[in-house]
Image (cartoon, rainbow, N blue to C red; front, side):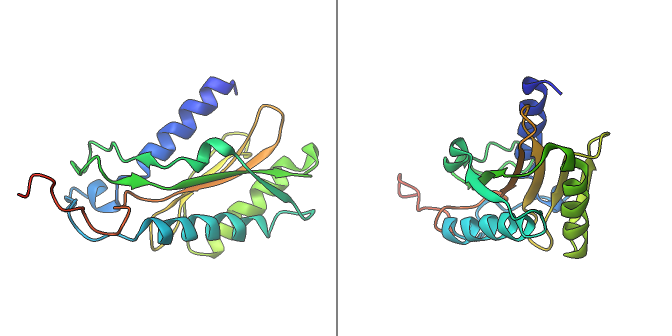
Length: 173
């Protein structure tokens, strides 16, 4: 898979992470509703990644993918919500994994996520990339591979208000 194809695929997965299940069922989202805070979302993202890494053997070293440290705006036209909301994401390279173990690692991570009750949305045809959503909170969870066959674990929050609630309108309305 070319780097551009992977980037597009990951982007689609991350953007779709903003659309709650209610939307898929024809419902609407109240974008002024209370959400978890940025700190809570970050803690959950980190928890999802680190728990999945435990099932990877030999014992991996997680190395942050620095572009994932930047919060992204929630530009999800599906729910019609505010662009002032954000998504929190983190991706980590998993270092120290032999290239010949790609499919075994993907299989272990997928099985772990299923045991945790998470929903697996897609698995690449070669079985090396796994995309899912955590339950009950609907965070995206991903296992993918770089062109150098280095695995990456990542998670992205649903759309949230940084402080858990919308900021008061600056116009006073």
